[in-house]
Amino acid sequence: MILIAALMIAGCGGAGTGSGSHKLDVKVGGKASTLALKPGAVYLGNVISTAPGKPNIQTSAHTLYLANYDLDTSTPGWQRKPMASPEHMRVDIQITGEEGTKDDSPFKVGIYSPKADKFNDVRSIIINSTIDGKETKTIFNTGYFDTTVDGELKITAVTADTVSGEVNLSEGDRSIKGTFIANLPKKK
Image (cartoon, rainbow, N blue to C red; front, top):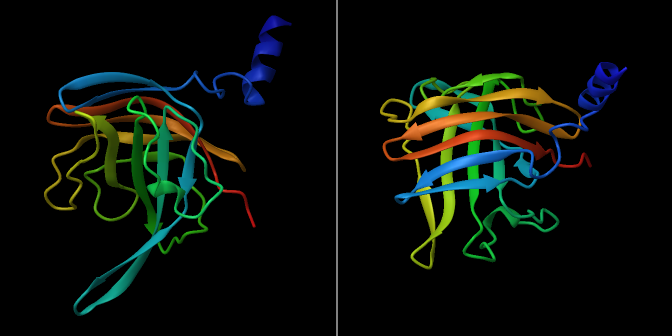
């Protein structure tokens, strides 16, 4: 009976989905921090790659916003709001989908690597933090041909309302490792 109850709680999202159960270990600017994550947010977008003499290529480009504070997504431009406290930290990770996907294409369970070429890859990584009293953006080099980022982001589950997974990405003396859950935008 206990096993059945535990499986029912986990299957309904009751175990491991609340705030505080997901965390990221972040190293940036010579400082290591463990972030007890609040549920993150997602921005659904797409990108069209162009090259002279070649056909345009479209792919989804969805951004995960993972923070140790509540994200207020109720107003336009919420992703660019300054952090309200020096203790706040946010990690923004954009991943692309398969060729032909677009902004309304759902996330797919799978592994996304910064070493991939244009599709199903980690397109950008930004750590937003306060260093020496100033809000700072630390940008990882995720260039397609010259990336120096190692690791992967793994989407482990997608529901109608959330996406969750694991991240283990590093570049030199900066890194992000842990688990997350992020709320998908409400359908209009």
